[in-house]
Amino acid sequence: MNREKLLLAAGCAAFVSAVAVAQTTPAPQAPAFAVSPYKNIQVLSKDITRDQLLSNMKFFAQSLGVRCVHCHVGEEGKPLSTFDFASDAKPQKQIARKMLAMVHRINSEEFGVKEFKDVKVTCYTCHRGSTKPLTAPPPAEPAPPAPPSTERGNG
Image (tube, rainbow, N blue to C red):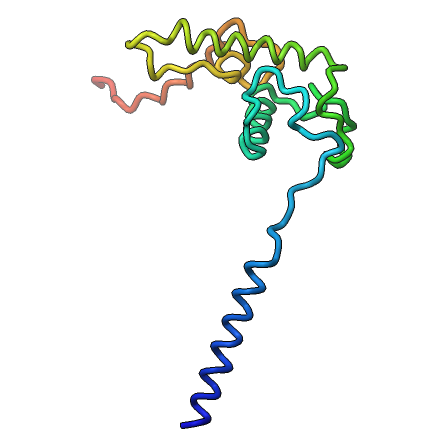
């Protein structure tokens, strides 16, 4: 019986030790930034979380078919920690701010009426993966050829 108590006590001690280590081990950190991504935010909410900010940036990139370097100062293929996200050196960043303000106005003022409350315009609404907004529908795909007729004549 003493052996069982010793094994149980050892198991409990190992469990408590593992829990203590898990609680004191810091969570993995996201990559460091050369300049805090929270500097020079002008259109997005100033209290945006890091996850929300990165999610928005990924959505912008996918909607326009671009990468971070389209709007931000940095070199493609280099770590994000080397980018200067606060810089306004690229005109595309200012254009993006104007577009965000336009989208906000459309969603809040134009679609703020009851009938359209679930309608939401986004970057993708116009851009569809291109840096230039699409101004016309894509060309219609040709209709597939009709299958050969299986009807037989009166012969």
